[in-house]
Length: 109
Image 1 (cartoon, rainbow, N blue to C red):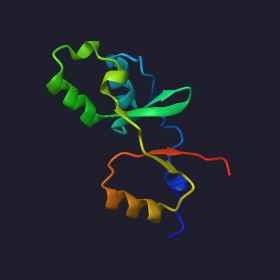
Image 2: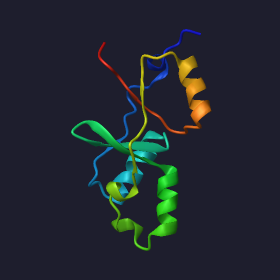
Image 3: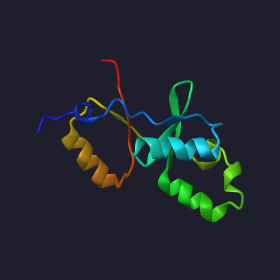
Image 4: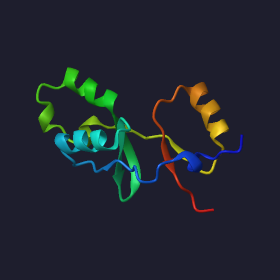
């Protein structure tokens, strides 16, 4: 199997947020892209990720969820995968570590 991760990516779907985006923007961004997650970036570098699960947990913890910002919701240190690796290797690594959401990045070779 010689299919690379980059071969199966949809380059048009790039749900991206900033730390200061409000709750409505977070929901709209995640919903619009239908991926169940969005990456929080700072200076075009990933600093966090917000998933549907993060939002559900926030509903359970916060009394005034509409006042939360992306920085309040995000999980830190998203895992990045080089989009040039073979999909077969990614699948094995993904299962072994039980990852659910991955952000793919392109490295200039």
